[in-house]
Structures are given as structure tokens and as C-alpha cells.
Amino acid sequence: MQVKALLSLGLLAGFGAVSTLASWTGEATTTSELSAATISIGVGESGAAAGKDFVLPIDGANWYPGVSRAAIVTVKNAGSTPVPYTIGATVTDHISGQPFTWLRVKVAFGSTTDGTSCTGEVLLDNPTGVFQGTSAQRELAVDGEHAVCVEYSLQTDTPGTAQGKVVDVKLTFTATLGVS
Amino acid sequence: MSGDSTMRPVAKASAVTDLSVIDRWLLNMGAVLGAMCLVLAGASLLLGVKPLIFASGSMAPAMPTGSLALAVPTASSEVVAGDVVSVVSSSGTRVTHRVVSAEPGVGLVLKGDANSIADLQPFAGLSVDRVFASFPYVGFVVSWLASPWLLLLGGGLCAYLLYVAFGRGRRRGSRGAEAAPGGECLRRNRSSWLSGGAALMVIAVAISIGSAVKVGSTEAAMVVNAEAKSSVTLGMMQPPTNLSCAENGIGNQNIDISWTAPSGNYPMPVSYRVTVGVNGKYTTADVAGTQQTMGLNKESGGLLGGVVKLLDSLIGGLLQLLLGGPQDVSVSVASIYPGGWESPLLANNAIAAISKPLLNPMVVKCK
Image (cartoon, rainbow over all chains, first blue to last red):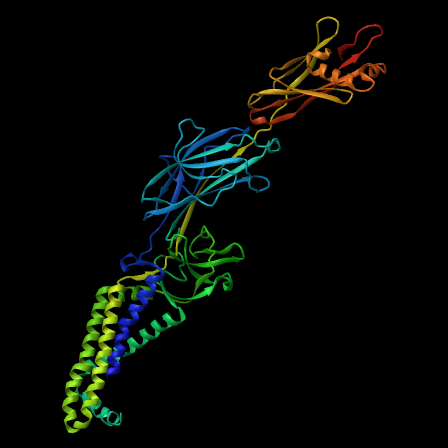
């Protein structure tokens, strides 16, 4: 009987150990927070509906070295919970699919006054032609909007062999819940 | 110990018969659940088994929100695609996702079953926790049981059971021992030892309760994305057009080469690169306008003059060359655009000719 009583203590010890172990290995969450939120992120023009795909208003033919254009993209949170998001980008040759390193793409938390360059804190860029991973996380509140400025510029030392190429630029805004 | 072995059944039997049905039921239940918990806790401590509670639903339907999963530490190299692993992301959050691919050098590419895309960054760590069992909704129960109030209630239950087992039991045991005084000391010692042990455990448990008011969770991260994209087309720089030659002045010592700037929706050229050649020798210069006068004067430093000078300096000289007949003058022009891009060439291999009439100076004439 006394042994049984002592064993029953294991109930507390067991849960204590499980709880303690778990708190070593994971982020604390209480029962009330164990609910499935919905997350959704969209991009679009300022003031317009945001969707999963948006065509940036930076395009056109006859780009030559030194040309640069900038436009504003609005990131919106249409989910039920605040989410952090990151921005990733690729710049590729449309035909070969290979990275095209002469077009610089800059994403800034700011604005553009002249339509050719962005001001504000730089979130993501490829000064050497290669993006170093994705941008740092930024938190977006429910129904919140962030205006980010996107700038393309063709390097002045772009070789003449690049003439006539079509260059695809893709920015991916990724919202994650629970992971960086 | 001989006294103990003879007296123990007597004391135990008398105590058990004194217990109410409820007390006995509580004791049995507490003992079974407690033993289970101790085994689990022991496994956790000895084998490294980690209990994980899913706080989000990206691994649904296999592991919905509120699942309890058990994981053991495994080397990343032993993980294969399809395994569900739990890792700590760079931000320090625990994430449990399925392995999409495991490649040396890249790391483990993870993706939630309910996510449309894989996690952004592959996991490059050496060790992961591989999930070997999961139980839907058990996490809710465990999370609930580990709440401070429930632990307090459990603590109360344990205290009561200890009282039933040691407090009441010992008093009755003492009464029963009057029939055999020789064993009383031993029994008291044993009871004291057990009580001391129980007190230590209660203290340990109390510390656990104090420190473990939260249950850990694993966030099977949800990922969604949106894309903004566009394409730009790099221009094909256009050459000038209408390359023509005109006489300039008397004596046929100069010619005017002119061309027309390219038209269309292109940037204006910043300059033109003009190349003049005679008999395989060339001079090149960048010209701002769309017309260039070329003369035979070697000292002018002009394009044609440059070629003449070049040819004169060679063994035999231009004069020797001209004795064989007139020499064609070739001209090519390319547009130079902002950034230095050069258009294709507009060329005429025989736009003019240099000749040396007998007894007269060298002349250049358009063809």
C-alpha cells in the first residue's frame, strides 16, 4: 500500500519531467493557444485587392545599361493572425533559366519619388548579382499592409552580348507561422 | 530484518482491511498512472525520448493540431525522405515537418504535409529528433493535465494517498504491534525511512510543479506565399543607316562620310564608332555627330589620314601600293549606346577609293 502511494507520486513526477523536458525543447504554449490559425498573404498595388500573383509594373523592352525603374508593391495580411514574412527573389534569363547577374534588384521598406530608384531601408538586394538568402522577417499585423519599393537596374557594365535577352524577375513573399 | 519479514504481512493486512473502497481504488489508480508516468519520464531521461505537442496544423491530417508525438534523437545522416523530424530552426523555434529530400551539402529540406511549399531554409544541423509515434489529440489532454491547477489537484491527491498510506497506516500499525513489542523499533525505523523518502519526493515534485507550469509544443509551421513578378527585355541596339559618301572641297583631298541615326523606340546613341580601312589597315574613332570628314592629310590626325600615315610608314609605303591601281577605302559605323553597348555594324567595304594619278597628287574619290 505504501509502495502504491509512492508510485502515485510518479504521476506528478512524470508530468513534471515531461513538462520540463518539453520546455527545454520547444516553445511554450498553453492550452488556450492550441488552435489552428489561418494565414494568408497577398501582394498587389496599393489600395487594390491583393492576390497570390501580381505582375509588377516594371517591364518594357529596350532596357540598356544604366536603366533603372522602381515601383511600389503592397504586401497584405489576409489571414486571422499576425504573421512574419520574408522576401526572396530570383533573376533569371528567360530562355536558359540560368541566373542573370547584370540586373540588380533592390527591395526597400520605403518609397520612390522619381520612379527610377527606391529610398528607405533595404530589405533585399543583389549587389554582386546574387541574393544572399531571403530578407529578414517583418511582422505583418492582421489586415495590415506594408508598402515595399522594388527597383530594377541594369548594370552599366552589362556586356553587349546580353542585348535582346528577356530577364524574368520573381519576388516571393513567404509568410510562415512558427518558423523563421 | 527477520523481525521485519515476520511482522510486515500482519501490519499490512490490518491496514489494508481498514481502508475504504474509495481509498483503495484511489491508491490503485494512482499507483498504475504514477508507474506509467515514471516509466515515460525514465524513458525520456535515459533514451532521450522527447514528447512533442503540435501547436499548429501544417502536418495535418497525419498529425493534426493537438497531437502528441514521441521523438528520439537521430543523426541527420540517418534520416531519409519521408521521415518526420523535429528540428530547432534558426530562430530557436521547434518545427516538426516531413523530410522531402536529404542531400549531403544541402541539408534536410523539410515541408509540412499541409503546406504547398517546402520550408525556406534546409536544416543543416547534425542531429534531429525523429518522430517514431504520434497520437492525435493526446497533446490536448497532456497539455491540459500539465496545467498548474491539475498539478495542484494531483499534488493534493498524492498528499492524501501518502497520508492514508503512512499517517493513518502507521498509527494503526503501532496499535497492532503491541502484540509483538520486539518488532516495533524496526517498523518505526522503516516507516521513518519511507516517510523521509516520501517527503523528499514531494519536495522534488513540488519543485517540478513550480518549474513546469508550461507544456512544450512543436510548431508544425504553416507556410503560404505570394509572388510578384515581371519580365524586362533588354534592347537590341540598332545600327545607323544610310551610309553615304560625298565630295568635299576641291582637289579631292577630303570626303564626307555621313549616316542616319537609328530610328524607333530606342535610346539615342551617345556616339558612333567609325572605322576606316585601306588594304587591311584600320583606324577607329568615336564621333559624336552623324558626319565625319576624312582627309588624306597625314598630319590631320584624321581617320583616313591615320590610315595613310600607317600605310606610309610601312616598307614600300602607300605610294608603292597605289602603283598597282586605286585602293578601296572601307568604312563601318556602329552606334554606341548609354552604358557602352554597341550596335551591329553598318559597313561599306568600298565606299571610296584612293588613287595616284600620274604627275598629280594622291586623291580620294567617292565610288
